[in-house]
Amino acid sequence: MRERYCRVCGGWHQLDTWPHNCLPAQNLARSDLPAPHFVSDSIDIRSMHDGRRYTSKAKLRAEYRSAGVEEIGNEKPQPIERPKADRKAIRNELRRVYAEYNA
Image (cartoon, rainbow, N blue to C red; front, top):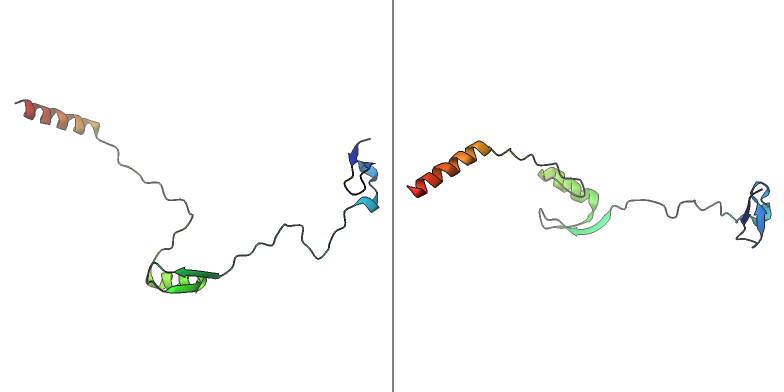
C-alpha cells in the first residue's frame, strides 16, 4: 500500500483509508479560487483625444466611439507586407549610374 505524510496530524496514512479527522477543514462560504476575478469600470484618466478627465471606462469608450477614434491596447499588430525588391531593376540602375559616373 502507498502511504503519504499527513500535514494535519504529522503521521503517515494509507491513501485508500485516509481518516476523516485528518482532512483539512473547509470553509464552505469560500471559493477554491485564490481570489474572485472581476474587472472594475472605475478609472482616473485624461483622454488623449479631447483632454477631459474620465472616471468610467464605459464613458471614455463611448466618447471614443462617437468621435470615430480607435482605442488600441494589447492586441497584436497586423503584419506589414513589404514589397519585394526588384533586384534586376536595382542592378540596371546601379550599372547606369556607374557608367554615367565613369564617363
